[in-house]
Length: 184
Image 1 (cartoon, rainbow, N blue to C red):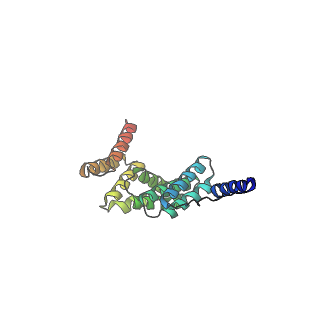
Image 2: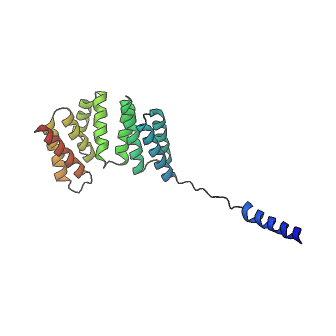
Image 3: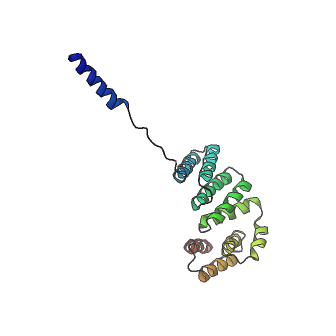
């Protein structure tokens, strides 16, 4: 009786503790992309640039062609700029603007990149004939960067007046405040 009771207890313990339903892991590319982007930012903060670049590239691959991808590409471009590769950064910033042209920071980064590459004047000539609102934003920034501040401020101010519903307009107005404050 004691042995059968002991065997029964052991069997109950084995069955209750030994079998566990396997945990299902679902892959969520969007969440994983943000995770890799954040890891990249941490590497960047720690000055581990190669690892940061790789993490941003993984984030871009996991979430291609979305608004989030624009953030990842901008982060990659900033990293390239920081380590002295403006030619590679240029592509990232241009892609970020194509994916989500409503973040003013992307335009500022691209203008800085053009300046580092020494192609600001050729880009001004290229954008002067464009009627595209987003090209006009970049043109205004480039004017300001090349010392044609009045021309750039007027262009960006007119753009904000003509396109009051443009989501990027508040950021442009803030930039104009900063630029005009520096002039005083």
